[in-house]
Image (cartoon, rainbow, N blue to C red; front, side):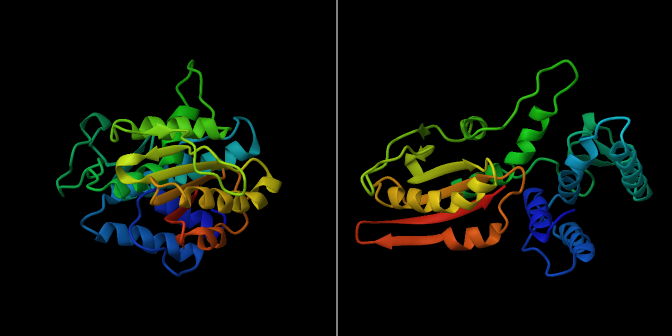
Length: 272
């Protein structure tokens, strides 16, 4: 499962409620799933499916030792689900046995596989940003005979984010310039003028860049703080190879309100 940070990121992206339980690895995931099952506002089967999706759907190369190990572990997961009256379907869907994917409307308990509609832009962005990796999954692992998409550059990530935002937000302005700072200006990735909110994306390219990305964002924050249309800045760092060694430390260093006489901006940081 990897580090605590990796486990926390997986469960948060899956929609698990509350803060990460302060427990060991083996107890943390059980407590978090139990908590999801006890919360009437949470679709616990959707959370479970989201947690399992990448493991269940992404098989190693056939004929390798890794594939044999994965097959055994996957079979154990399927058996555990069956013992509890559940079944896993592709793309992170866990349903009660006897309920097919075609009929995955709300079950007898009133829960639904569809998340509630956000009421504020911050709720919408939280869902979209934390779900970016899940949104990439069916595009990078498409059906046989179709060309998979890749997300190896910042432009790839920006295009996906832009596509996910467009149905919800009418006015999205990519690549608007910021006021000058230290003799230079920079281009915003996305400005949402109705909400005075900017989204800045970064993709970690290598270990050297992982060490520099925080410094890059510090400079970006100074640019954005001076922009009259930017009151909030969301920094989205895509780190697919987990090269940032202290993601929580990076977030703590950058998040919060940055204010001086020439401007103020509230900063949030996400490391995916």
